[in-house]
Amino acid sequence: MDTTATAAVGRQPPGPRAIAPLRPVVAAACGVGYLLAGEWLIRRLFAAYGPVVSIPLPGIPVVLIKDPKMVKQVFTEKPDILLGGRGVRPSALIYGTGSMFVQEEPEHLRRRKLLTPPLHGKALENYRPIIEESTRAALASWPTGEPFKMLTAARDLALDVIVRIMFGVDDRDERRRLGRPFETLLNLGSSEQLILRVALHSVGGLKRWPKLDRANRAIDEVLAPMIAARRQDPGLTDRTDIMSLLLTARGEEGEHLTDKEIRDDLVTLVLAGHETTATTLAWMVDLLLHHPDILAKVQAEADDGGSTTYTEAVINETLRIRPPSPFTGRYTARDYQLGGYTVPSGTRIVPHIGEVNLDPETYDHPHDFRPQRFLGVSPPTYAWIPFGGGIKRCLGASFSVLELTVALETMLRSGHFEPVHPNQDRQVRRGIVLLPHRGVSVRYWRDR
Image 1 (cartoon, rainbow, N blue to C red):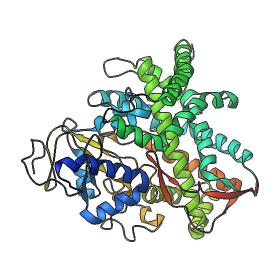
Image 2: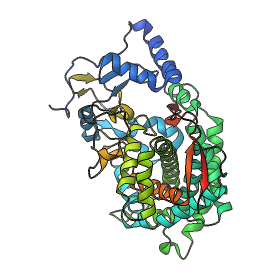
Image 3: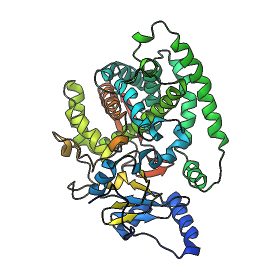
Image 4: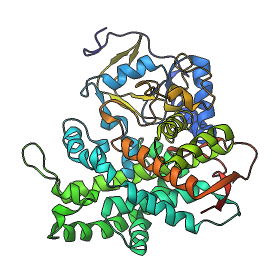
């Protein structure tokens, strides 16, 4: 099948339809429906129409997919045919339009190459002791034997880790000062306002968001002097924090990142790395506490201090059934042939991460928490997509897995948890993230 040429006119994906005068009403109803019903509505649409569904959302049509074969086609398509930056454009409202994440090729690839070394390979090992130290400090602040929300505690921990690794700041009070404006931006990203503003912004409404403007100004007031001072640091080339590594990074032709590019990409890395890790850590604790046999195996591995194979399988399985983000996307630059359907130009094709990860042809008992399915087996590339895929796959995926592994092992070596509620939390959508509805209430006792 030739998908590189403009597709011939054919049938469009199924979905809610209406005569022309009523289309805005249907679009508004779909938008309001997602605000109110979230993932429940998406599951109902897939059940009604099949693995590819067209939804006339306000401002831009959307085609949802959950078939791994279609996901593979979308993720491997040429970047001038399916645009990755436009596909995730709603994220630009929080990350900023200068973020590497929302750039098209070849700019995205240029920036990605410069950002890759600090987040992969040997560089990761520099972060292990930092993650462990931050986790131990967090544990010391948790109440003993009293209920608290793991999600809140995990967010505080993840923010401390990411600020420390990004900026190389050892003083805890200074890390809190640096993290405060990012925390404000993170709260806006997980607010219901975000979905509403993205929808209205796409049709010309709510162009300004004063709270967001203030948060970005606060970040600029923190980062601009830091970047300027760090450039003058005589020991810059010896530092291992990510800001310093970005300041010294050079491209294939000797080019370096500008202060604005560094600012935008640091914001992206802090926000993306924080929310994914914090939410997944909370979900892991929730799942493990309600599966004591699996918890016992992770505990034994943590106490042994050697292999992390089973712990990493638990992380992979948690990300499969509790992905922190519901979707990723690509934007059609022209009419596009997707499977047996024609998707019109100017449509956002959205692989739905949660439904793709539950593909019954890939996974036996797909809704069950079974880490053993990933023992000795890498997650399938197009049926396990918590980090997205293709050229837009999350740059910090390896770092996130390292942080989750070290944090969880440190927590289990230091004490033990028990759940406050007998049943697991359910997923709810807040903004563009999927969160545990009660925040995972737990009690913790320090053993050592």
